[in-house]
Length: 262
Length: 248
Image 1 (tube, rainbow over the protein chains, first blue to last red):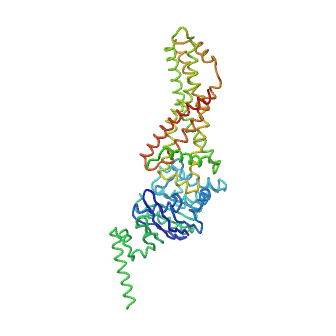
Image 2 (cartoon, rainbow over the protein chains, first blue to last red):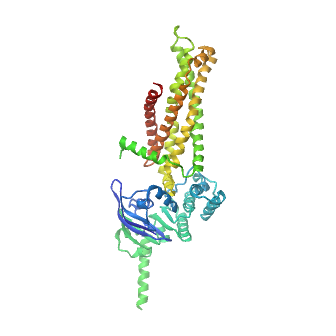
């Protein structure tokens, strides 16, 4: 579990204002919000890329904001991160990219390391792209390779920054489902940054809504249709599809209520 | 926000402090190191040879044309070519040229890694990204630069020799005599020392500009230009200081 307590961060102006939340273990925790709302800064602050101005971030009781650089570097080996642009190393093949964390930190034999990397690549259905370079594969394959690299050291925490950006709806769905499967399979605390409502409805188990640098709402995807939070309603129901879904949801609830009354 | 010079020096020092530490994995370091020797050293050899041969040849022609005085012996041409190459060209001028080639390459490579979040990815993995990326580049360039400096000396003198061989502006005998006349071996050491210092300046400043770039591809290009300009100016400054220190 990751507990964020009252964190604030400013660059030229304030970006995060006193944000507190709990991100649960074994669940896909989604941080949602409009572009520029501060969700990427929140994620980068949680992982420690940005140093927060105030507040605490506890990973299963360990406060990362108080750790020394060396300890934090060591601790980060328990984290995996999928970046918006995949961030694969251009000069390495897909297999070498996934092998990289193992080469740096694993004391296993070369054979075991190789087997582990191939296992992770096969888990994300990239078993036939081992020797290709990132520039030779599609955006969706790059994301899958980045997921394989992120999970190769068996992380406790997996961070995904807009995993669907630049992907078609079908590939997006595949990536979302893959992340959720991995989360449950390895009991990882997964945190996903997204503004894609399809992802929210598909895999959102614990949703945190950020608006103008503040946490405006937190709940499950089922609760999202019943909230009074206006910025969230504006965000969710910007799409006609979700407006209709909300109407359907209300009609369903009314029908259920009538049944109960009868 | 523009950082002033003092802030830049400070953040450069902080980055260098992070850079110079023991690598997480020596195996990975040596792999990177050898790769950088190839990229910065061996890939620069051809341009070093071409420039040195032609500059050696031109200095020879210029010396013959501008020192046609009965009071000056003919072998003075060879002596002047040798000392020009050993004292200045093969260290300072060569490093100014390499600041353009190697410096911009380092800066743009690291800068691109920065804007595509590859450096963030290293940090998240718990890798000391400054140490992993910059340390092998600096050490490799400092290791290979003496070879480039000595190759430049050799091929520069060979360029002058080719003028004596293919034209009749000076005899081979006079040229070779001049090359050997009053030879001071310390000049080679002096040149190599300068080369090593300049290699550190080129690689570290280029890495600093690349590592701290913010924005997109436009900023990477600007960082690359800034790296070359600033490292060139600092090379010239250190050239004066080292000459005063080592030859006075």
